[in-house]
Image (tube, rainbow, N blue to C red; front, top):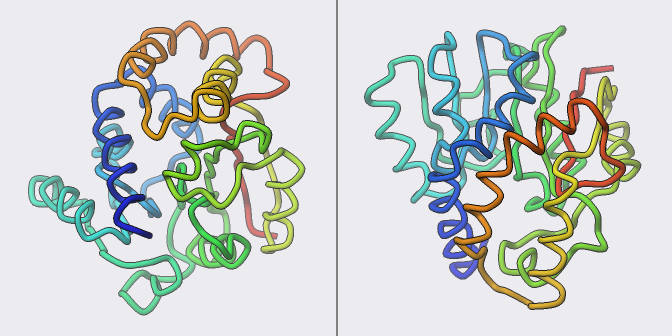
Length: 236
């Protein structure tokens, strides 16, 4: 990942630290499937980790030394949290065990990985036999724009494209649905029309305020498209 991409991601993660409602919305999708032992791939600066600190064991795999250092401050205060600085390609050589986690979380990370099928294969290998991989990825390739380029995204996913990736990696899709119907149009406008290189803080605050209402509505009516896709995956 280039220094420009790291800078853009740092700016984005710093904004998301203050979007509690949005972060909790993502966590609410994960919560019904979470077990005691969790591996988070690409944990960033811990915006979702904050909601999981009562779990028995959490391993945070983070390729950025800067982000890993930030996570280490949390690990020093919570003995159930361990930080591993490294890539998903090397995770089993870094002391992460195979076939032992109840969950592997990969939240807004898979789009940064060129060989996404191989990455999913590795994540599935880390799961216990009854474990679940929980994926959260950007959706709708037609919304791909300057923001995606600045963040180092290789792609945005369609529902069929994500399912094909999972199946090719040896996984079984238990659940897959779009999230944040309104957000995808804002992302498209910012990235493709305005060609913004950074997320607008005002827009981030607006989305955060709307998150409880949008999430409640989407629990009733499943959106046909969305800014993101959420998938629950098992081993085949």
